[in-house]
Length: 570
Image (tube, rainbow, N blue to C red; front, top):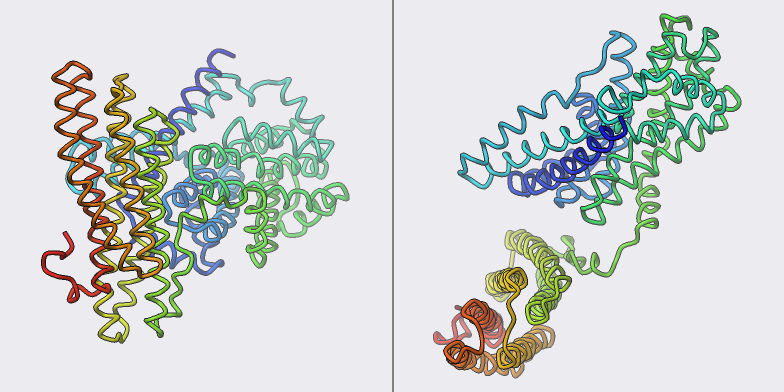
């Protein structure tokens, strides 16, 4: 049994994490900004966010599943932390439907894992068929969805009939009865067992069935009081699923998962005194219309589950900002996150387009700094064979993409306002500047990819190649500095200095290509290493081209009419 449990847990976790990654990337591919706008509209109002969470969870009958999806949406940048917390509040109410189904119909709720295998097949076929990016994204979503919940099924089975079956262990049942007499221990037991089962609905259903069969005795008032702590604990234990889902995601996704835990934990803490005094059980008996007996005990337990989550949501909904602040306090915002997103693109400045344009220029400067950092990390990582620097370059490229999206969207909205001729002429130049910086980020990724090939093939550069690569890096960094200074101070001389450096880069490209071919001919370096070096030189020259476009735009006063034909952006 122990071996089966260990194997099921290991495989379940692997599928779970892999499915989570596929879902997140699929959401980006298929949905993008359309889904972001839809969800943003539906969840902008906190009450609507709660209703969305309730509805989704009622359909799929798993708050864990809803929260995992929310973590994926936050990770994909499609939901803000505050919006996610509102949906999670609603998910906690929606998940109580399973307990009601168990109690009213006497059967288990709809198992979402039953759909995992067809979802995997459909997702795979969509991937195989290829086609548009949207279709591939939908395939990734379905494939990830199926693998994720198949993984959850394996995790659940690890503590079911195929592993260590808790529900059929008489010793475990006796222990539950003794533990449930102490509310604090009952809550802790609910947390632990639900975390193992990966489902509060499953654990509550087990407790309901045990109570119905008399495992807790036949004093139904006492049975209700003894089982409520398990129910409260299960609300905390179920949040472990989202915590697992957030392990390999962004910090904001981790905050959403933490928010789920904090919300349920605080609610349980302030309900504990009511448990000790027996007040909570009386509230449940007061709102339940049927007499408490063996035939209705499961209904009472379902009511207790609903009452807790409804009251907790009502308490937290008006102060969701405080919940967000607590979560951010637990997992503070890093400097990396601050650098990740434009923070001064204020839409209220649209009525003063000149100021809006100045704000945009500041963000373009920050974007340029990020682009410089990405290129630095990429070249450093290639020269030193440092995987951490390469990873930093890739992460920064994602930040550059975020800047491009936010700045471009801002400028497009600004273009709809009544603009002066000067501002109207500057807008397209700034848009092209943003695109040039994004392309520089793409070249940084190209360098990362050839660096990874160099590491994987265990290649090395000769001393001559290392010296030339170092000079190339220095020259690119110097050109970046000139362009950033030109952007910051509208410094024409710095922009002209950048053009001079670009000429040097072109000459270096030709010179380094010849010298490296000579080194290969002399047997100083291998053909494979030579190709990687030439790729580095070519990408550095392309980066210089894009920086040249920006420098030329600055020399022309961000007016293409002021740029000589020979200097027009490439």
